[in-house]
Length: 139
View 1 (cartoon, helix red, strand yellow):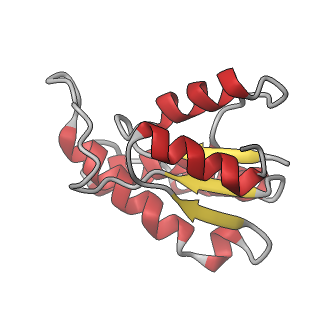
View 2 (cartoon, rainbow, N blue to C red):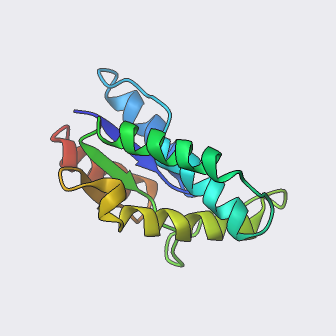
């Protein structure tokens, strides 16, 4: 089973991945393709970058290709209940915008297709880990 954990920076992604990997060394940890595209779109939306349309198109195609190879996309959306301390050096507007763009991407059937299972996990790190273990039958 191929699993991708996706979310904006300071969303608990690294914690969930490392906690899961420590308990389940049989899983390999790889980079996440949807984050890359979501950040590109968020940077453009905020006016922080102006991308050549061909670059964005290639990024979109690479994301589609990558997503076609995975079985489960776990998304860690930002919400007010799961408070995560964010350092003062973080770009909060980019964090929020990337989160919104990512949630739009996973709602787009042209991006995720019809075979990909998507799960949005919230809660404490322990709750998220237990939910992921349940999803993959590794509890």
